Length: 187
Image (tube, rainbow, N blue to C red; front, side, top):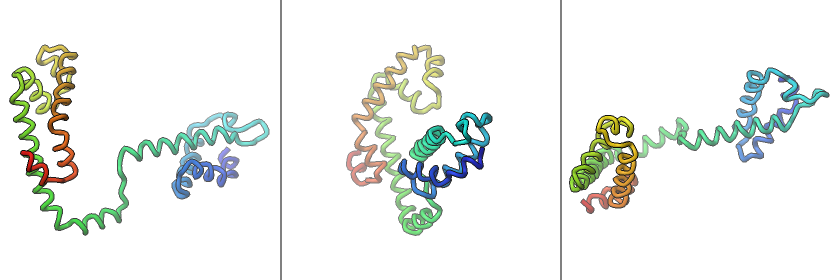
């Protein structure tokens, strides 16, 4: 079966390239397809027609699924080449210490302003927000420990998040974008 698949190797690679993939990655995905077919397809009749011709549509769908799975996984995380780390380190070596100190200071100011805001809320809301933010408990665990219904806790936390997002959303963006000067002026 693998010999028949390999006869159309260039076709399989071109199919993956046609999906928008670069050539070297298309080669890798095609090789992975061979491994997957060998491991998972026990009945050759699933991918072969009666006259020993490969079912190209079946292979196409397999390649497409493998490529889109690769894209979905790759979009979750940003991958860097080893060389990228070296260039980032050399460019930012002196700047990093100052940036870390500034970020830590800005982060502490940001979190203290959030907790100051929470302390001005009604005691029920303030206590529930503090439990949610300071503990690693799930909503169900908070509900079980406090005796408050899960729906009530969910709605309250949804409202907390909305209120905090409205009041501190721009500050949060400044913090993430490392615009510390603007963040410090708000405090």
